[in-house]
Image (tube, rainbow, N blue to C red; front, side):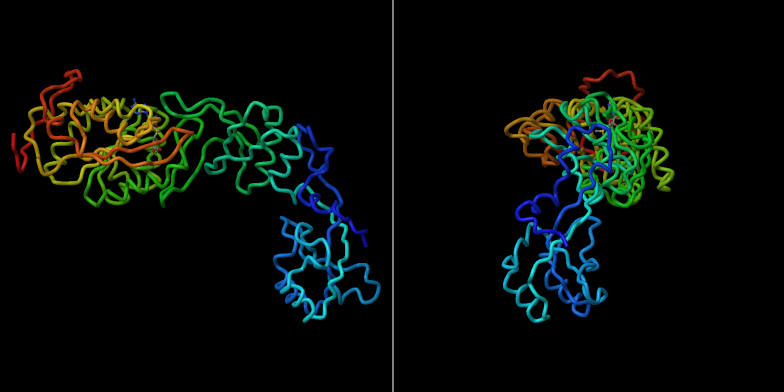
Amino acid sequence: MAQSPHNEAKPLLYRAPPEVRGMVSLDRDAFTQTIVIPSIRVPKGVLNKVVKSLRRAIVQRPGIPRVVQDKENGSDEDDLRLVLLDPLRVSSPSSFNEAEAEALRSFGVPQELQYYNLQLRYSNLKTEEVLEAVLPEGQEITSAFSRVGHIAHMNLRDHQMPFKNLIGQVIMDKNPGVSCVVNKTNMIDNTYRNFKMELLAGEENMVAKVKENGASYEFDFSRVYWNPRLSTEHMRMVQEVKRGDALLDVFAGVGPFAIPAARAGATVLANDLNPESHRWLQHNVKINKVAAMVRTFNLDGRAFIRGPVRQELPALLQANAGVHIVMNLPALALEFLDSFRGLLGREPSCDANLPIVYCYGFSKDDDPERDMVEKASDSLGVSLEGRCSVYFVRNVAPNKDMMCVRFAVPKEVLFSTDQTEPKEEPAPKRQKCGETTD
Ligand SMILES: C[S@@+](CC[C@H](N)C(=O)[O-])C[C@H]1O[C@@H](n2cnc3c(N)ncnc32)[C@H](O)[C@@H]1O
């Protein structure tokens, strides 16, 4: 039996050997060490009851057993077991609380501590414990990553770069189902909102398969936009769409608004400028079996609004269907609102039914709601004050919020003859409208 470790046993259970500091290529064996932890000797007959009564004092580590054979009791080895205790909780018999001590007494188990030599391996350490031991002392450890199917993507800092492959390997080892770890190497500021990525560990397979709100999506994560943090917003927005409504998605990506809306029974027009997004959007329409409900386009957002949307809108409004126009390109979408100016020209207006726009934007303003209303109003050329709602979607960076402004496109915008856009598109076929005022 091991010697009492005094104070030393406490941190060792949660700490790798100091020799691993500075390791850049992962050597899992170098993490193996023998540490000494407290235990109590328990007769087999009362083992389950003791384990239950002491559950908060028992060691809890991935891969470490709570109960082991007592090889050193000398007499009848089979009758006794050692229950391993958490050295952070138990350092002497007086560490047991009242209830634990009473339980041990009632089961006739002596509170005397035994010291057990435990082999601690790489597999018993958590990600942060491994990285804390390896990276230079005092520097920030980041083990955070976002998960997209089998891909974990990280945002490493400069000081972590020398350890990038080791970090990737540890993330892969410690997270079942992750078989590829990548680091983002640029800000998401290009047209198609995708990241440049560098492979840190695993197979270079960027085609992810994910489920979101009951629908399946497949896409090349290195070439399209996908953000798992938007799943709640996708669901929230689509809940407004009813069977028989229409959803017109100007910046559709690979379909996280379009496909659930089609599954809910809406007619969908979905557009994205990125040919790669468009290709995966079409694929996702197929795998979700909603091809009958969805038409896809590969156009600039403005051309989509002034082409297919303009074409379809009169009939949709006339049919009194709910028409939802979603514009999720937060860095730029507000600027696209001017495409609605005079969109239906002299079409007879349908007062009762106007399309509802959900336009996303980023705001760094102290008053993001006012900021969104002002920007949307400027772009539309009429004030939305008092006739829109603005809600907070998520915080994307310190002092930067993603917001959504929701409004019915004002009649005087839609049916105006004052267009800021070039007028080369063919005028939409005039439709009769149930109730007209102008
Ligand atoms: C922020 S992503 C949103 C995608 C999707 N709606 C979602 O919620 O995941 C914006 C999308 O707009 C597309 N995009 C960027 N500029 C565009 C433009 N001028 N016209 C149409 N689509 C554009 C990008 O390719 C990208 O897929």
